[in-house]
Length: 362
Image 1 (cartoon, helix red, strand yellow):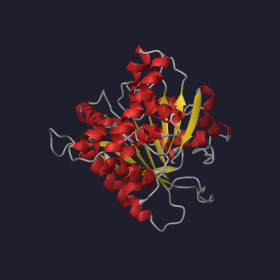
Image 2 (cartoon, rainbow, N blue to C red; image 1 turned 90 degrees about the vertical axis):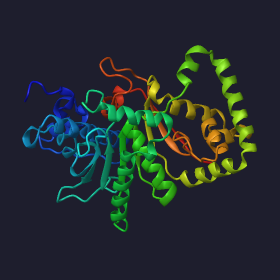
Image 3 (cartoon, rainbow, N blue to C red; image 1 turned 30 degrees about the vertical axis):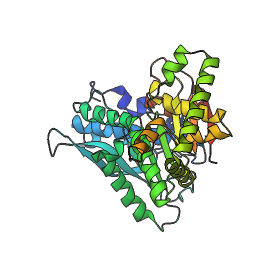
Image 4 (cartoon, one colour; image 1 turned 90 degrees about the horizontal axis):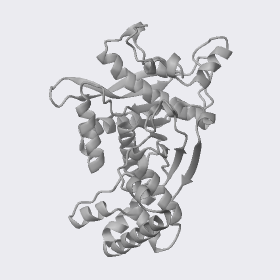
């Protein structure tokens, strides 16, 4: 193996040891069997396939092909094959394409039926690659996430097109499930696509969002204000939002209808409590848990930014306003890996301090 290879890209070194060990226990045969009824196995597979999507682009830029390619082990180990890659165009050099996502098909062994909980396809989106020579492309999209304008970018349109085509082809096929998965910027793409599929086509796609970004003032507020003051501030914010919503009746009614359409879709959000990039989601769901009933409950469907756009005649909604979701929160800090890194999500549950809360609407 090339000594210049980043060990984090090698499945045998950095992959999920608890799953790799099953192949060893079975006499070294590979791929390994997955318990699709087990949340930990589903989480590990989804995270590893996203990791493989990062490495696809690393393999491309490093000219690693065939036996030298490192990416295939991250999906072939779980009985998946690469169907297609999703590429974006360099906005400086037309025709210069690079990989931001991929479609994988689950291929069961010939002597085994497909498990009813297993996906037929996984569409995976990588996040920002800061060390990449074209990192400016990802950073530009990160800014679009912050401005809530990601839906209009070419990468988002390409992702929508790919998933629309895949879902259309899968219609009528018994047990054909399509999963969405992404990390960081890729989680924003998966959220955008999954949300649109539910809202516009009533198609409920299982979705795995690892460290999804949502910019928020919550980290600063949590650091600067004591608990009692924070609760009072949040209560005031909710009441003000609810009051404005009473005035902006069309916008409030629109958001209520949107929540009803989206409510069957419950994406899995995987966040670390110390990850400031995800703090907006953590803060939103924590405040929502505190507001169970009464006038202030309507504030959980509203945001000041959306209401401002409504006054200007433009209807938009913040992506973190989700009627249903399962929030998985890790509170254990790895000495080697940071709170925003994907690596944590294929670790076994015993190595994470993981809690989960299921939120639903109404």
